[in-house]
Length: 64
Image 1 (tube, rainbow, N blue to C red):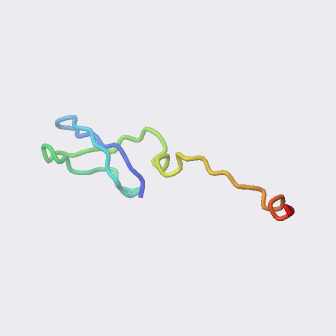
Image 2 (cartoon, rainbow, N blue to C red):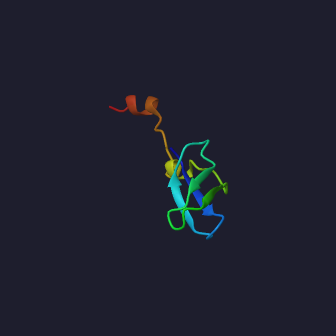
C-alpha cells in the first residue's frame, strides 16, 4: 500500500500514513478532526526510488 500525506482541517497537523488508493480522509490523532489526503505526487515513489538495472544475459552466457 502506498504512503500518503494527510492534513487536518481543524488543527493543521500533517502526517504520513499508509493507506489504500481510495482512502481520501482519516481521523487526526492530535485533535480527532478530519484529515484530508494531500495529493502531491506519485504515492508509489518510495517503493521505486532505487533504479533497477538488468544485465544482458546473452553476453554472460558467452563468457568462457
